[in-house]
Image (cartoon, rainbow, N blue to C red; front, side, top):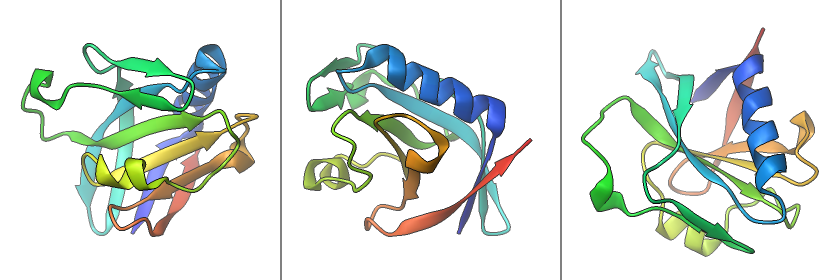
Length: 124
């Protein structure tokens, strides 16, 4: 499966991660799915999100029902691009984007709920 994101949206995501550093940051990804591709159109800040050094979360029961939420994106200030066991156990949606320190394009990865890396396509 391919995940498509506009470069300006990805730049905003990287800026968000830099702003939150050294804490983790987390956001919701909104978009649509079709023909084996997920297209990310915008992101939302989850209500009542909390973050710190080594964690970022939000209460699922506070989210409205929204079938356009494709997953989450969060930062890894440690620099690791691999999802942790906690990341996989708290997986929400269809995909998880990880942006790792130093928050540049080469430090972005997308995973499914099994922890398998997906293809990321950046559109201009």
